[in-house]
Image 1 (tube, rainbow, N blue to C red):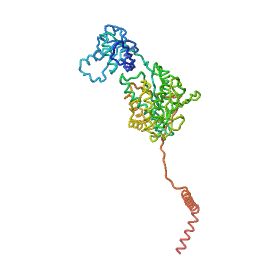
Image 2: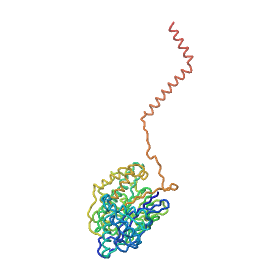
Image 3: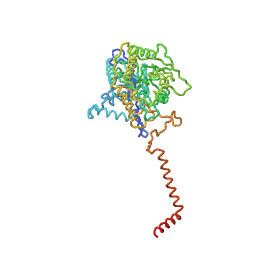
Amino acid sequence: MLQSTAAIALLLCVQSLHGSALPAVSSYEFTAYRMQQYNLGQHKYGCRGAIVVAEARSAEEPSLTRRCVIMKVEDFTTEKYSEAQRQNAAAILILLPQNISSIPHNHFVSQSFMVSESETLLKETLMPVYVAPEDEQLLCMYEEVKQAAATRTSSIFVRVLLGAVEDAPTIVIAAHYDSYGLAPWLSYGADSNAGGVTILIELARLFQKLYSSPRTRPQFNLMFSLTGGGKYNFLGTKRWIEENLDHAESSLLHDNVAFVLCLDTLANGDELYMHVSRPPKPDTPMQSFIQQLEEVVSSRFPWVKVGLVHKKINLVESTVAWEHERYSLRRILGFTLSHLEDPKSELRGSMLDTMSKVDFRKLKRNGIIIAEALARYMYNLSDKVTECMKTHRISSLMSFLTSVPRATQLLDKEPSHILLVNSLEHEFKRYLQQVHRHTFRQDKRDPDITFFDQMSQPIVMYRVKPAAFDLFLGGCIAAYLGIVYYAIQNFGFLYTKLKAAVKTKHH
């Protein structure tokens, strides 16, 4: 028997005509799981539909035609499911408790749902059926459609599409996490680019607190991107952009991207250079953010030098200097923040780039500058933002990131390196609503880059005498062998002489 299940992202768009219990947001994205579909012999079972654009309604509404019916576990019965099918409902969305074990197994609600569930699976339907774990936003939506069934004063529009996107502008914050040096096993990359990754994770933690409340949620999407292969022409970024722009049906990169902020080598120095492929135009989001960043530096850290470095992308060359150039090649505005002015600086790839080269005060200061500039830009503020970056947390993140070498060719082979990448993913999941991990494999026939194995080999060292002793020992051995050879060649003569001498002595 073949089974298939589909996980799909649902986009919830809220359009309230009067006072609403839902937070004042234009949209809310969550993950739902579609009812399975399979064939057994000549029989077909499950849900064939997937895409839905429909208005949300409660199961108590008299008219469900072309509506998305919202139900809790206690609402879902065979009768209501059959009624939704009879009226040609557009879809059914079932809200499942976060802790399913909280429903007693022998409880009436549990028994009723399991019976209805088994009967539903015995039939084939074109009506999409989705299940989503409850959360605060979905429960607010459920209560509003229940209220709308009685008052009919508001409506909620549920849009279920593969890869649906939001209308708010998106700010992408990116960094590469791999290191580079002469010997991969000894390349820990503290400044380049554990510092950039640390600031990125701290930004995710800080802004998660603001996005968790409807009152402090800005009118922007924040996307955090950690990529590998940064030391090899930013291949991870290149493949991810291609995947989202060329192959995905919909992506946040397809729509309103305000700008891309790339973080690279920020753990030292009293300089901040903004590397751009083209000077930002006036009144653009990128120019506004750069102005906010310059104001933060001038007002709080006047000793820090801020500069704009303009470097055109040479299309003839096959390599790029900074990560933002990968986005610029696809006409997405972006820039890289670094304390280095020269992209060819030896500090970007050295075995000596260790924790001893990191100034935690300057790393924290750069994180504060970026966080405050972002907050000022997204919330249109002009005052000082409260500092929330902690030195001990920054130190802990840096120690963790530099605990093992992060060379690209090691990250998918050694258990400790795999654990590091998994831990980064887990850290993201603590703060971000959705975390997606993409793994790209090279084309074996035409790879972008080829790595060779056996980077660590055993070497045996021997202690020996000086060369003069060897010459003396060699001479002694040669003399000894010469004497032995002469004795063998003249054995008869020597034997006769020796015998005569013994006989003379005897007489």
